[in-house]
Length: 159
Image (tube, rainbow, N blue to C red):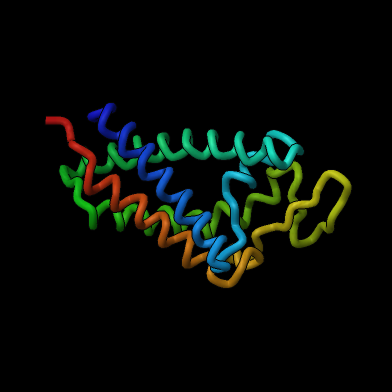
């Protein structure tokens, strides 16, 4: 695996994924803010949560970029379209599995069956994360497709 290449492009792809998600919020297409959700797992301070969450999200992006690189290396294929396919799979897993299970592990998120409390105030994602807007699943999958396409297009496999 070409670690310098995957770290560079993993960083770039994660920044772009996060920026596109924030753009989706600004355009009113979704209300999801993954760095904020991740950050509030660590701290109740909403301002700090955004910073902490962004840093943790970048590290998660690097970890997933390494997984993508392992796929690219093992199938001997690193192209934008293969990366996009992997991104579509990852985005779908995030929407269908990860986000709906989040209330079970997030200390500040209510669940669909348990209402707001003094320590649990974040809205749960709900089915396909649609509690954050009906376009949220589409936006989430699309930004992961872009993430994967960037990795596939620019990752330089080991010779």
